[in-house]
Length: 113
Image (cartoon, rainbow, N blue to C red):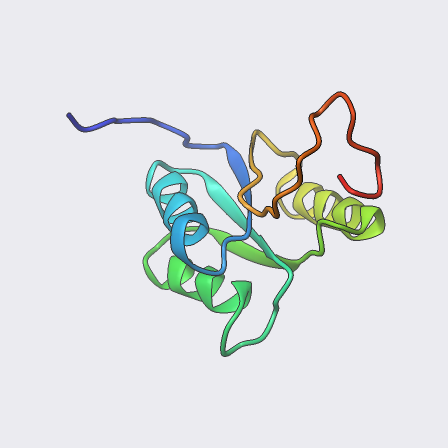
């Protein structure tokens, strides 16, 4: 079964998009028509989100890279502002970054989150 989605005119932010699952998600959303904001803590041209955005653009997908450390609220605010500046909004958010903690959403504090 093949899932067909139409995200033309939509804007997707994908965190942790420098490789693996995040890069794959960014590619699928872009192929479905979304403009993709590739967010990653690493911005190196040789190994980070920047090469992912470049690959997407080379394949005809509108993409922008924003360096973002999701553990830092100011960095996340910058990500959102850059996405809104570039594309006038955000329609899809994929939080692909993560580390493991034993807290629940009800008990986790802001610093750990």
